[in-house]
Amino acid sequence: MNNQIAASELPLQSDGAIYHLNLHPEELADNVILVGDPGRVSMISGMLDTVEVRKQNRELITHTGTYKGKRISVVSTGMGTDNIDIVLTELDALANVDLATRTVRSEHRTLNLVRIGTSGALRSDLECGTFLASAYGLGIDGMLRYYDTGDIVREDVVDAFVRHTEWSPSLPTPYCTPASRELLDRIGHDMRQGITVSAPGFFGPQGRQVRARLRYPELNGKIETFEYLGNVITNMEMECSAIYGLGNLLGHRPLTVCLLIANRVTGKFLDSYHDRMEALCHTVLERM
Image 1 (cartoon, rainbow, N blue to C red):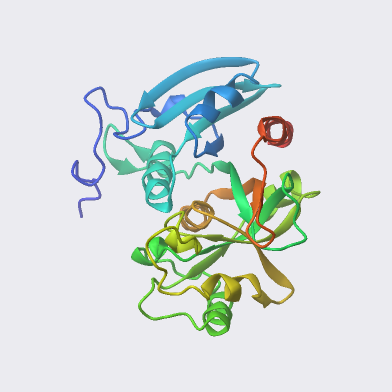
Image 2: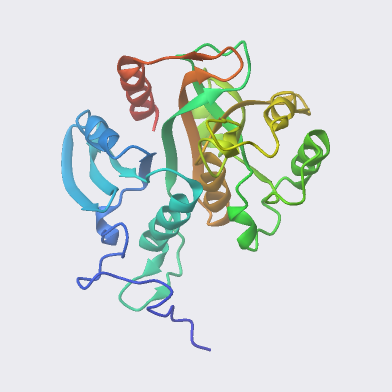
């Protein structure tokens, strides 16, 4: 049986670097901070004690260095779960595939994957400027359903969500997976926690109407009132569920922490949040 991964399935750069991230395995640390905004990579790497790697391909930027003796990579993903599918698959390949032979390594390398991002709150009691750690990622984008997920999806949560929201079969089938309990306890122990919904877009999929009319204008109201086994939906963004889904599927430790910069219920928006984002990044670096 040939276990070699074909070049068409895992493309590489001419120098052997992984195709989209443009990285070699030795340039990736075990501790990885994921950010959507490419500009945030330099902001975080500026807090590191040393920086040894600076790589870029398209909007995907990686800086690897050290912080108080811990080796850390900061990687920009761009926006959306489709980008996360690319980035996490390639990060896992860097860790667990011998790129020279295109075969899976016999020993598994586990990555700590922490997304730092911004998000909009879906509960009136969540003030703008709050730090939030996602206990669960609930995807309404359908991305993870293309994979054989085994038992990593909390189908009981999905079933309860589908019933509560009267989910339309014309929409992608939701999925829900948990954060790494180890990282949640270590990094997010004193943060607000809840279920984070990841949507496949910023406007219509998150219930925002500008000119194009919404097909399900009542959906956000149903999402906001969902509760299951004491867990409520706290916020909505565009990456968490894919990081949790693929992270769990591939044997890594995923966590998302967000700065809440808007409240969809009260209509408030934090238009200046640089200092709060810096504080959140410092907190994550200290606790990685």
